[in-house]
Image (cartoon, rainbow, N blue to C red; front, side, top):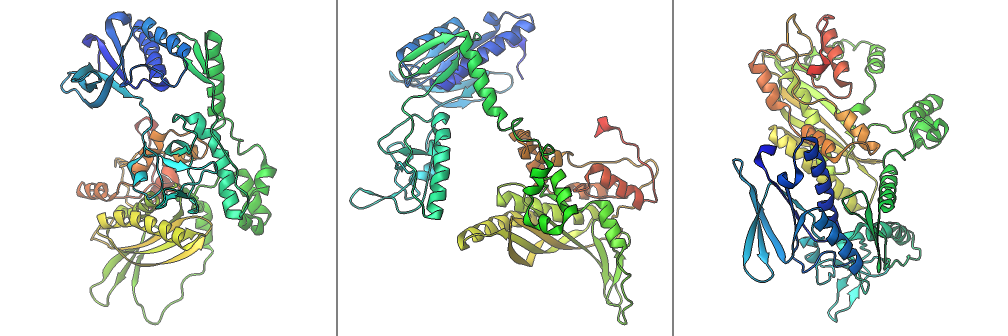
Length: 544
């Protein structure tokens, strides 16, 4: 981390397009404000450089726009290096500055020292597009026609568009209508892409879409104003920043605060309930109306009190003439898994556990890995070594290739977790359904002194092996309120096995254990207390 005592602070922005220029000006404005707050002179403590391989900045904009923003860069003390093609950056070590390696347009090379290097360069085509067999342009982007159809080059140089493969956005270029790669074009192509996909599936007429020739660009000038760019128009004014800010905030609002509150229209929620809820009757519809965005993960389980009452209503199991096993832990005192001892003389205790939930992420591989770790966690909590697993897979309705792909990806992710735990997948069952789901029945050998939820003693410390709050993160993600960093962090934690942590706890004399899943921290803590004879636990929230 940099400290003001190590002046000056060198920032490099790589990229001479609109994004790079605006980013450099915004960073200067923010850093100058922060340094002034600290009582430091920005001129002495900050150096900002903008490097680009081109001979000029903002080549896709009018001359007047380039002049206004070049003046803004000069006014803010940003050094502009033209003809500097960045080849790579080397991070600094032990308090030294990093170095940006640049090839010079006039020949030779140079390095530029930096404390922070930010890249904002133009879009480049992914390498796999060129190897896909689809026609690409000279820059490697997919060639599409006005109906957004990709194609395969024929022997005579024509493009065969009969593949029913569509593309839009930065990965594609419309034949005869080259445009720079910018979000404004991708956004406008989105509705046409939807219409063309629907038309293809329904056998309707496609919709032609050509990217607009001109668009309004508003670029911050670093001093509370903005520069408007459209065709040959070039205008700088403070009120343009207010317009830019209003447009940006309105756009983001549509995906956050602009979403309809779930609790506002109970009647509409009920009318949109799935068919299964409607068939179940009034009580189910009322429950769905109050919470239509149902959790698909471990929080989708039935509530603890409902589950307990349902199990308590079952009759006692009948007495068998031939006793085939001893149930050591069962539904009379539910735990993370059941423990059953087999054998006529030397009884071998085995842990049986089962878990199932619907997918809550769009990646079947990640979901499979999370689901398998979740199922294995019950064995981990009891100190059992998982040995075998049976899978119950629900795959969404679709064509053979789609069903096969989803199933293969989901089970590949599950195998990663199972293989790492030394647990063999020995069989299972598949069926089609409305959405992706995975359940696993896991068996493992129970060691002597296996752990249960009971056993808390006075003076024991409560240890958490993973951060809490994954349910809150994904509930927020459903409402576009969670950041990508939060979601990524939650998934990384859910993909991490509890096995190593459980082993450490056993080595250090753990007396009771459970995994925190659908009932939440307090729900599972209450289970520990009940199983330990109604003991009481003191929790300092600041330590959680």
